[in-house]
Image (cartoon, rainbow, N blue to C red; front, side, top):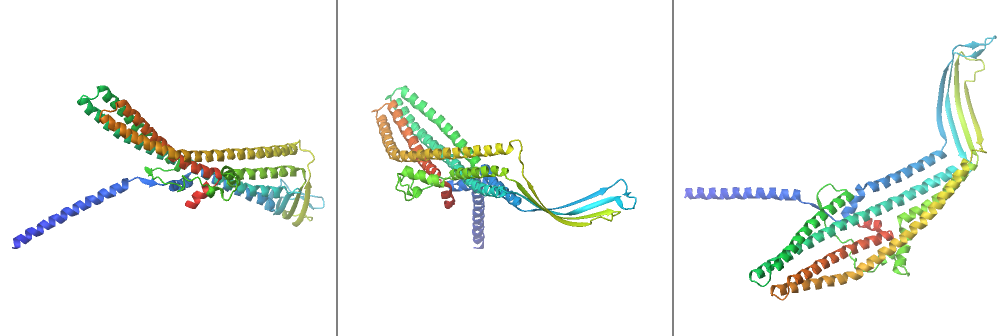
Length: 460
């Protein structure tokens, strides 16, 4: 009895050890798979990473920082300058008059503190401070425009990857269909229902489909490499398809235009003219150019300088008339009458730059109008053809299934099957491009209206 119990316990122990070993290897395998799993990113996550890592965005951030330093420099001009000075003079010899008074000492020391301020009577310093304040505002709008443009670049790269993935899936599905057709042609050839030409045609189409898979796979790798460069990713990754807006197929644009009684395109233009960061930047630049003309004309006014000094002097041997300590102030005015035409040239240069800023502002405004018009028409064109492409794909799929079935029963030839398959795969690609292009058109329209960055920030 005891022998049976020992055998039974030994069997249970072996089973437990076996289960423990199996569990151990399963845990190791699961951990390895977890470590090797590719991390997936949504479009919103790619936006966040790109805005943190982008060199171009960081350049714009540095421009903003520099503009703040320029304002600090403009403020420093308005504040008086406090400085200390000192000097030591060693003479070759001591000289005295006949009466014994010191004419030249052996050495002389001078030190003190100076407080001075200089400003133009035209108020150029105040004008420079105003220009620097506007420069900070302009740099902020430039930074917003840089972020918005970079978001658009990330979006384009993201949808390029999605398109490449979809085309690869379509190519793989095409190989499966053509493989089945090749097998059907081989069966019919064996029973003598078709000639060898049908099989050779099927083999040729299958080989072409295989090369298309290789090409699509390479295009996907290249698109992912470009996206990784744009976003700043160094690891192997994958992307998860994530619709940016749920109402992509809806032509309702009130969330972009607000309450506007004009036609939708005109409402979008008005929204863009009031919200686009790049246009706001150009408008501020136009105001800065006005101030720069005023600043250049201020050179015709005199400059007033005020100075206050405390000084102490020490000599050895000391003269009887030595003034050891003195405090004094002075006021100076400088009015240059002729400087070789410099001021005139600077004023004309500032006026010319003002004209350039105005012309550039109106040029950017017109360009934005065309950009809005293009994005609006593109969006509604894709919205209109999407339903037709869906119907076309459904018809092409049914047509291929019917022709393929007819081929199996000898009612259609290989050319009919190839034509039906070509129409099917073309319809798949057109619909795939249209779906992703519609999403991109939505993003372009938001960028054209100047609300893309605001939307991304709110979703973040």
